[in-house]
Length: 632
Image 1: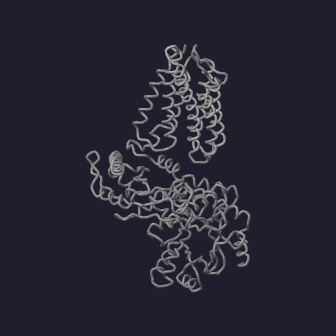
Image 2: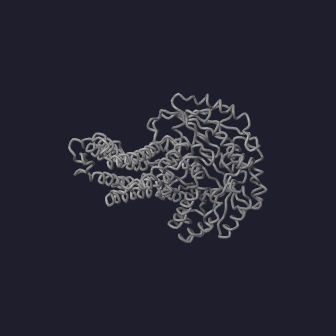
Image 3: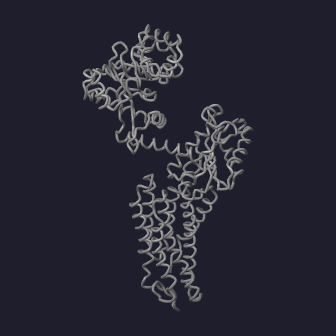
């Protein structure tokens, strides 16, 4: 009566899938558990389908009760399979926890209704019934198609309602595809009920799910078989609300240099050895590797991070033998405990990643404890980063202008443009807090571009000569100077706002001069477009006067630290330095002037220009214009 040609192959494929999947390391996530349950139920559907079909074909050899039992089991598993496919869709979409539990409970209603018809079938014969002639469909048998169609439709509805929760379009497309495959399978079941093809379509859907979501390689780091940062993020996201775990992070000091020293193959083998050691030592905990020599151990509330790190650091006192190479590695560690200060998940992940930097600064067997105070500091940095991203993306970076005064005339002659951003409350965030973040995350180029564009617009919209200005200084970071398209970018804004490039002086620090070939090439190209350069913060770090002879700087700005030192303890070093700069053709600006006495001392040793709070703090453009007019 029923055709079994395809069903046995389907069962063998499913069993193979299950055995292979269970033999690989798996992170304990609901989506993974749902996948395992789905495969098991699919196997159960096929087995019960074979048994019930055989029993129905040979109904004279079985009692009516046994026929009700095997058929009822098949239909319950069949309906459960439909629900589990939908439940997997929810798990794939709900990785950020936005779908409320109430909705999930409501989604079980179609499954429960169908099961109700199956259980009551011997009494009311509505779904199916069995008599002396054998198995018969009831008037509500169409529920076998309707339930699957309902859950397919619900999957599409949930996808459309929560598609912003899915980080990758590929994941969304995969959900659409395997549900479409299930739809086709259900259509074939309606059209060809005696060919047991639905199981084949279910296997096709499972293969799509495996390739898109469940491949264990997605959660493993290379050939080490250690869970990776994606697994860490997924696990923490799912379990973060519990907050009953402790986190031990540790990092291999100077990982990049060591990897170059030993070679990539040896270091990869060393990482595998470390992972094996950690799994053997802490099998009850979960170990993750986040690349670049960074490890995480997630433990339960009873996990002793300090004792664990002491044991781990003792192991690192001995070499790791990798391919006949002895790897001598040094580590630092940090300990976190989520559950004290309540913070959102994304901020918690940023705290965890930042803890690696803290661990990298740890020395010896000391473990840094990331307490609520330190966690609050990390969260503040995250908030600054968020405000920085918002300001850059919405073109909200502001420019403040600080006056530069001529020692000879005592009048305003120039200004330095300084970038500022604000938080949600409109308060200014100090540049020493957001500039390092911008340099670290690569947004400094966009930040600098906005500042330069707004300075150009300020010059266009205001007659700076009437304001008493001869130039405005704009800072270039070392990262900006590395941009080969920098001269084109600067030229674009000069042309757009139709201004003379000579009125903009580009400030760079000695840090930008580390790559001598690069900065010489860049400066030569940019000065060829009539820009002028200023050396900023001279004396703050390693200062190479001989290198300055080759630089076309029009001005050298003395860092406030050496200005303050000279004003406190007069010596001959700074006067001689200023004299040498003057002989080399440089003009000199002294930063950090806070009183008339400092201004007089700088004027006495030959400084040309003065800048500091004694004259004015950095001002918004409107305030700066008023300042200029009052000092004409």
